[in-house]
Amino acid sequence: MIELRNVDFGYEDKLVLKNISFRIDQTESVVIMGPSGSGKSTILRLVLGLECPQRGEVLIDSQNISVMSEKEKRELRKSIGMVFQDGALFDSRTVGENVGYYLIEHTKMSWKEIEKKVVEMLGFVGLDADEIIDKLPELLSGGMQRRVAIGRALLSTNPRIMLYDEPTTGLDPQSTENVLALINKLTRERSISTIVVTHQIADALSIADRFIVIHEGEIAYDGDFVGLRECRDERVRAFLGPFRASMDLVAEKRFMNGV
Amino acid sequence: MVASLFGRPIYIAETMEQMYLIGIGSLFLVVLTGLFSGQGFAIAFANELADFGAKDYLGRIMSLAIVRELGPTLTGLMMAARVASGITAEIGSMKVSNQLDAMRSFGIDPIRKIAVPRLITLIIMVPTMTIVCDAVAIFGAWLIALFHAHISSTLYWAAIRERLIFGNIFVGLVKPVIFSFVIAFISCYKGFTSEGGTKGVGQATTDSVVMSSITILIANFIFTKFFFPILKGYL
Ligand SMILES: Nc1ncnc2c1ncn2[C@@H]1O[C@H](COP(=O)(O)OP(=O)(O)OP(=O)(O)O)[C@@H](O)[C@H]1O
Ligand SMILES: [Mg+2]
Image (cartoon, rainbow over all chains, first blue to last red; front, side, top):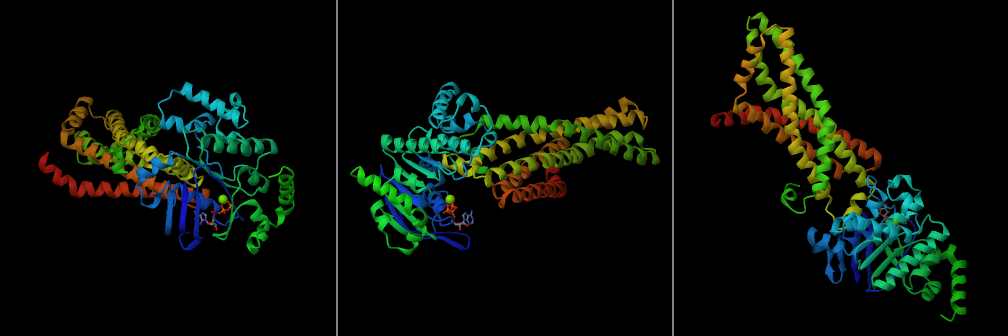
C-alpha cells in the first residue's frame, strides 16, 4: 500500500508538488499522467524515499518513510522495484550483471543460477540473451536498454511495489505490447501495487483502471476511465485533447465488449 | 564514511578490484616519479655538499629527505592526480546518470558500495606506493652518488642506513595514511556532490585533483611542523 498525505515537495526554492494526496491499495494499479515537468517522476522518487517531502507524509504499508533511518529505507527498498525514466543502467557492468543485480547483491545464489534467471528474464522482455548478456549497456539501442532496465527491476525475489517511469516510451509496438503484458502479469500474479507513469493513453488503459492526472504539481484528476473521459476540469481537458480520438475508440471497444 | 568503514557489509570483491586498478595502475607512475626526483635531488645536493667538502653526507641527507618528505609527498601528489580524478569522474558520472539512485532503489548504500572500497584501497596502497617510491628514489640517488658524485657505495649505504631509524620510517608511513584519507574523502565527496551534467563532472574532477593536492601539501607541512616535534619526544 502506498499513501501520500498532503505532500509538498520542492527542489531548492521551487515548489514542484503541491498538496498531493492519494492512496494506492495492495494489488491496485494506477497510471499517472500529465504534461512534461508536472512532477510525475518526482512522485516516484518520493515513494522510493529518494527525496523527503517538505510537508505531509509518504506512507508505505502504513510506515512513514520520512522518519525512517537510512538502514530501514534500504530494507524497504528491497521490496520496491523501480524502472527509471532514463534506464539508469550501470554502465560499467554487463547486461547480465545489470539484470541480475538484485540477486547478485542480496542472495547467495551462484552466478550459474543467476545467469539462468537472467537469460529467462531477457527472453521475457524480448531480448536475445546469447547475443547481449556479456555486452556493456552502451552497445545496445535505446529501446533495448529500456527493456534491460525493466528486466533489472523485475528480477528481484519478491517486489511488493513496482514503479515504472515511462516504461514504453521509445519502444516499437511489439516490445510495447510485451512490456505491458509483463507489467500486467506481474501485477496480477504477485498481488503488488503498481504505479506507471506514461504519456501513451492506449498503454495506460491496458494497465490500469485508475488514472491520476498531474498538472503543475497538483492532482487535477483521480478516478476511473469513464470519469476521465467526461471530466470537465480545464487542465484535464487540455491535457487529454490530443488523445480524444483514441479514448473514444477504446470506449467504443469497451462498450462492444460489454465492459 | 568513517562510520561506514566499520559497518557491514564490506564489499570484498569491489575492494579487490580497486586494489588492482589503483595499485597496479599507479606503480609505473610512482616508480618513474621516485627515480627521477631521487636523482634530481641527489645531483643538486651532491653539488652543493661538494662545495663544503661534505659529499659523504649525501646518503644521510637523501635518506632523511626521501623517507620523511619527498617520498610521501610526491607519492601523495601523484596518487591524487591519478586516482582522485578517476574516483571523482566515476562517481560523478554515476550520479548524473541516476545510477546512484538506481543503486539506492535496490537497497544498496552507494557510500558503502563505492566509497568505502576506495578508501580501504587507498589506506593500503598510498603507504605501499610510498615505500616503492622511497626505495626507487634511494636507488636513483645511489646511481648519482656512484657515477656523478663519486662516493663509494659502502659509504652511501652506511649513511642511508644510519638515518633509516624507526622514527623517520614511522613518520614516513603515517603521512601517506593521512594522505590516503585526504584523497579518498575529497574525491568521493566531489563525486557524490557533482551536479550539472558532464560539464559539472569535469569541473568536479578538476576541483578534486586541485583540492586534494593542495590539502596534501598543507597537511604535510602541518604534520612536519607541529606533530613531528611532539612525536619526536616519544620515538
Ligand atoms: N534534481 C532537480 N533539481 C531541481 N529541479 C528539478 C530536479 N529534478 C526535477 N526538477 C524539476 O521538477 C519539476 C518536475 O520534474 P519531474 O521530473 O518530476 O517531471 P515529470 O513530470 O517527470 O516530467 P517528464 O514527463 O518530462 O518526465 C520540473 O520542473 C523540473 O524542472
Ligand atoms: Mg519524468
